[in-house]
Image (cartoon, rainbow, N blue to C red; front, side, top):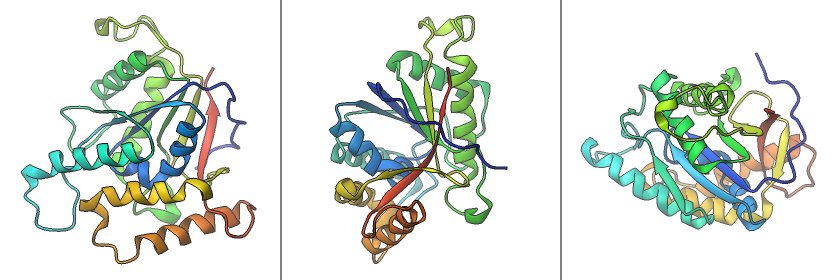
Length: 242
């Protein structure tokens, strides 16, 4: 299963909410794009579903990991100009499912922030890259966010206990899904993306050549999408929801 062809992105977007499963998801997938949005005057906020307690590559005590990764994500967000970073409580890294409770919590965030666009993990698995993009937490976060976008957040009779007015998100962007066909040239914002990734010390410090790895991956994406040689790009699937 794959996504259909992407829609043309809306041109009048003022606010974007990025809803992702783990600290660092937004930076690996989208930080260059987010930096460009911020440069264009768009207000961007992050909502992280977990605090990444199952992450890391050393012997850091597990009890310290959530606080550590939250701090890393806030530092990374600041690099690309995002100041509003929220974390949900009660969801464990590695055990995420698209529950009604998760849909309600994401709906609450949407109704509070009132974004025109939501960026989230893909709810569809990539069979060519099952590791990374197709982590079960990513799939669950993408599915729950999609349900929160439609029908939950826009239906005034859903989750009335939140006491928040309904809100219609007009566009959704998926990161990490199969065959993404909307490319964003991030050549000019790449250095900020790299700095944001390096802020996730617990997740990237073990990589000997993070810069080389990311340049290779992003250059391949740009080349496959027909961008000029030397370009770097992030890729998404984009759909209108209203």
